[in-house]
Length: 275
Image (cartoon, rainbow, N blue to C red; front, side):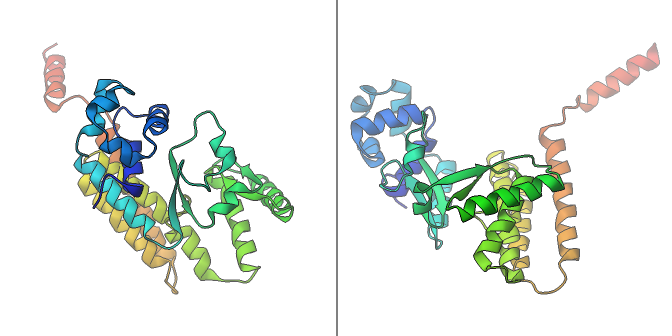
């Protein structure tokens, strides 16, 4: 796997320790493309960035970064998936004009739509029934006027937007398979179960919790398999939900609950008994 050119070099640049967006854009302005940055000498890099950053850029990528690059390239190999970088002609002009544009982003579908008129629909993750209804009406009206809706990742309101997107895509025909694909297995939909399980697995791997990461991967696989099911889904979905709650509790106890060491508790109990 080449780590110094193409999409791999962009990921490597974005994930290099100490290299933020501003520093990366400064390097790109001088060297042109990420592959030129990684082929530059340490001395040349030090003329643009501090020595500690030049050190990071000339070091071999860590095993974690190599794994991230490999997963990214595998995702890009799927139909409709791509990485859009600052060097691409179809990088959205409006995004390019913000004060701190991202070096890259990942897209699934027609990237050309991002250059057209769009509007974001954002709101509460615990939306009321009226809020969801309003979101559907706004989205329908804006879509009919030629606007594209952009997700802000608030589940409640934007699930209504997803429902509308489904309605427009399938012209009101009852088609269970696409609904299940969208809500359970779509890796590019942040509201899908598979997307959430994959994000959880990735976080747990970075924390070194390989056993819990494996449990997340198993849930992801089951979610994808369920998308093609034709039988009753209530039981398997309830089972996945119960296991997710158990996993959540385990992660909470493992990383967020602070308890005194056992011997400290025993010492305190002995002190109370003595008094």
